[in-house]
Length: 351
Length: 222
Image (cartoon, rainbow over all chains, first blue to last red; front, side, top):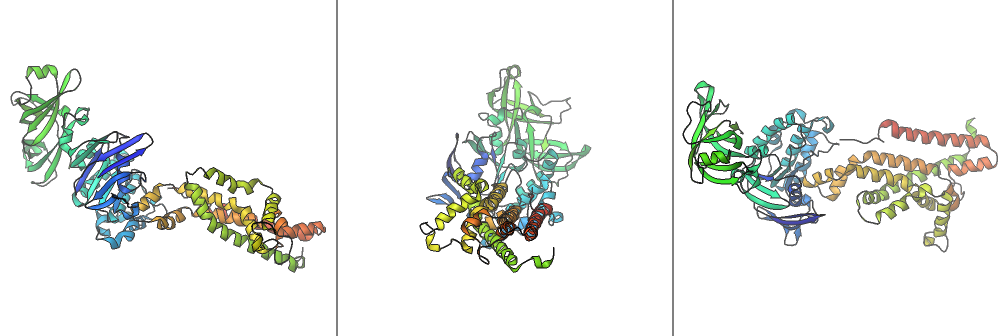
């Protein structure tokens, strides 16, 4: 799709293609045009120009501007927007009833089950908590049989407790859905947990697009320079019940031990490693409390303030980040191509 | 007071009044809906002018309103061909102008309170414009409709000045309760005037009480 939209002093200009399935993150600071982009795709911005086509079907462009209700789009708003005059079941049926004849969507029972809504079908909307409303809103959007699901920071309006309750539902969705999802967020942890592909926006422009971990570890992008700089790596549970109540995970660059996981051997997992939890050494460390250490090759360096540099590391196909002082850089003579050992203090299991 | 105080003439006036109020209310709800919808949502610079016109009957003396309506209905007025002056039809038209703000303003406010978000959500779920109005706006704006209907009806019941100017006092046609009260007072028949006035007072009070006590006047908040 490509689009242009001017609204006051805001100017959105974007062109991109996103994968046909899976969660694609739309990431960027507040006011960079994430929400506006979704509204353009949904047809809620009458002034938009350009072209939007989904799987070969044109919604905008070539003199066509399909009105929103003719676009097979599901939209989950930041503020859950349910119909307060209907109960939960009628809210869910709203879109389903209107689009039922148009295709084979997911079944009512399946979606209700996926989002855990059985117990609240007869309840009225004003009695639901924020998190419950958002679950109903997601189910409502799915039941309208969309070809594309747009989610605009569905967790942003919730308190931390509700966020933690809702995240596993989103992960279940991520595994179950076979339609593309554009997931707007400005929280890196959500992006790392839920999405595979990322569109990085700044001031209404596309700064970069690509697999999430590529963008997280690209030293020319701002993501690799914040305090939360991190990498996501794909791994697999190799031995669930390793000695000492640990589990052994393997990834393309080696193995990692983490406190025992509740996942079957062979399960694919996603790990998040913060730049600040990684240190470098010239030899494998002995006599350290750090359990996880593996060989890495330095694949890039970038300034990160006057005293520090950000170092990008390859371990097999995986990419990691670490921040070291210039003094350490000199002492270890870290340059692109250096072979070193990474020590990882902490690994977070995402899904 | 005994029952023979209620003369057939007064009963007829009551009947004319109720018919006038009911018909006016129904027509105003139908015609006021698109107008109120437009007022609630337009960004047009005409909005301020139309708002002011709609609100005029709130402040103008009814006799001024009636006077201009009479001129318009008169033999040289733009509405002459419909011969509305001193007919029930003319009264309906006059009442619609007179009660317009009492219907349009509550509708406009309730439409505005519905807001943009439920409409956008409904559009994303496949509902077209009319469908959105019927299945989202109407149910959410219901308190506004109840308020508009009751205020429009009750306000038309009490109409006097406009009727006096364009309706006159034709029994069975344009003689309404307020005119009947005025007549009874003029001939010093205070008992009959009192009966009609008290009836009107109680009826109006009961209608308003219905609105406020039932909670219909309050909004459904999310």
